[in-house]
Length: 602
Image (cartoon, rainbow, N blue to C red; front, side, top):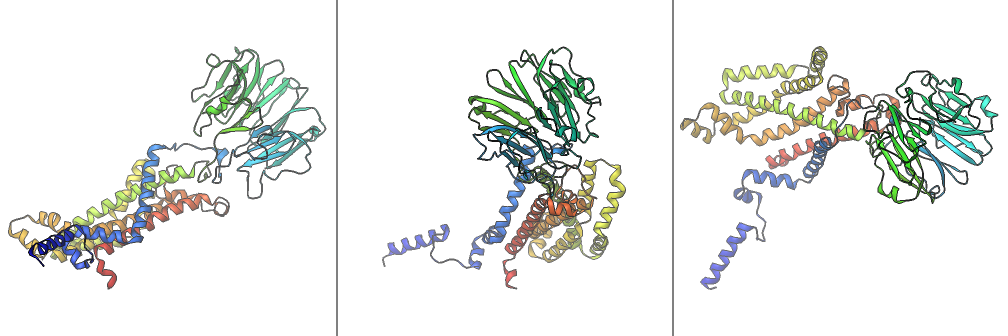
């Protein structure tokens, strides 16, 4: 072989060695000679499939609980009794295919809707299960041809073409018990369902009301025989007389009982939870009561022919066929889709957080609350939102606690291991005393004594400090052992010889050489701190309601009723906590194996 070919082959070999273009894979010891220790650790960790999958899972959870709360803020005071314990899913406004194109009318309940076709057939959809044994989807048989339906919070009324009334659903407060004197009435004009109550208005202006009169103190008085239509919410009843006068039909003084005197003759009325509204004969809208957000008044909205009220919003039809909505828009219930006003809408049905616009072809266009991806809790709060905000709180407490613990552990362990002797003996005895303290009883006692004397922010800070101050002995022992192994090596002797101060030797020379072991310990300690915080909150000694953490979310799921019927309230927080802690532990195991790859051989 010529000298030129030998030189060329030699250059190729060197380039292949440098840039990885070699056929033969180097052994671990050969690679270790070419790579830095950190690169070796990273490569070993990446090669561990279980650790990498765990890292991906943890990063997904971590980024979710970091980004979601920043985008979607939570109202800690929010409660909604009409949305309590709603199961996961997005079928609240999923109109049955058999009903689409043949809709006569629709009525909206709290978490379900009821529709009747032009043929008189009744359909129920949405979250229809009221209790473990009551489901409003269980429609009574032999009702005949139904012409009207009315959905309440937990029950349904139906009227057939013979003037007969039917009711089903929850009747604990007699809202489904049709009065005997109404069973013989055949001139019912309109039926209504509300929160634990029902009502009917006859052609001659009489109103029949039954159900929970403890919540709504119904009082018709002098207006009996004059009522054209009524509106019901969870507190009271508003009536519209045949001569266009808006009147309160509740004995109690409510926010919407003070009806404006200057609005004139009304043609339609509606109620939300806190306000009343009326459309006058000249097409103007008047709203009164506890108005918490921007509401269209009579001078800003004209040409209205009808109005419908939801829980906290209104929907109105204009004379030109357009549909407008205003009020709260938490679930998009006030954001009318552009396709609604492009279609020929004839009627709009609104209730709670849902809207249905019926076109001239009998089809429904929907907008509003479709459901909850992970359901709601016993206060009607979105479980997904609370899991995300609770995860941020749990991880924050765990992270800060482990930072405190590791910091103290490095300082005490480093000093103890380097100096030895009496210093080592004193510091290790202190560590043993702290380690011997019964953690949970101590934390619970301290929380009970001090917890009620400080605000919630200070309480959270106290939990972080307690977790950190009581968790450092293990880290200190680990660091001490590593420092004892490193302090007599050549680089430490060299540092002493050139006059480096003892503080610098410990924290600038020895500790960086054992940082990989500290990282592994901190990773495993992070999962332990999260579990400890969750345990304290679960027992009621940690972060308290309404501020969410994964621990206190599980605190309200201890009854057998919740475990059996409302499984989503404990399953999803448990999965989030379990996945996080297991993935962190597996990451820690992967780091430990990467730092000491020969450990698996021993």
